[in-house]
Length: 215
Image 1 (cartoon, one colour):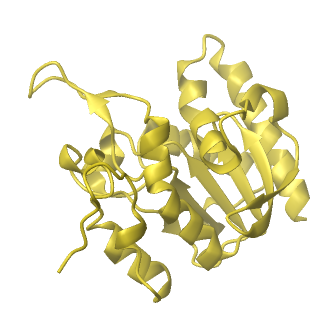
Image 2 (cartoon, helix red, strand yellow):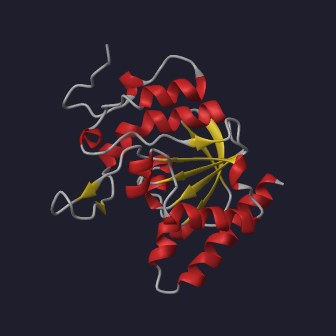
């Protein structure tokens, strides 16, 4: 029988498996009903990549294409991120990528209209927190790259401001683990930037900081 969270208590905690590593986490997350976002999303989009990756990248939430395919960072922002990682000297194939929230949150004027991304609330981010705590505990990355404000707030608290700390190496206690983190902008912010080339160069520069921290 699948566990159910009380209607007034948003949390994924009852759905977490007691053991089994990433495969067990992924199977359990597919059944998560810890907050209302699962009702409209196509499916859970769990993290993907090397099981013991040296670097973990954490974004905000799945986008439209990720929701349809069930994999993180497969849309335009993901393709840009892969290019930036490679240019910075980080092999995308050796990374683990995930999101702070595992279901796509969107608005849609009509059923056949385009689904428009909507930022997750603090309550939804908190509800999904147990998955985000479980992933680094299993993968044990040497470094976490924080992609954007939502991921930063999910990991480091509501006072996080990406513009103040981007491109720096932070050391913080997160979910009982001492982590090293490098914050930067989300690749989707690069795609929206007026000066896309400058924004892209900034992302690559921050990722180069992460690459040096791993060397």
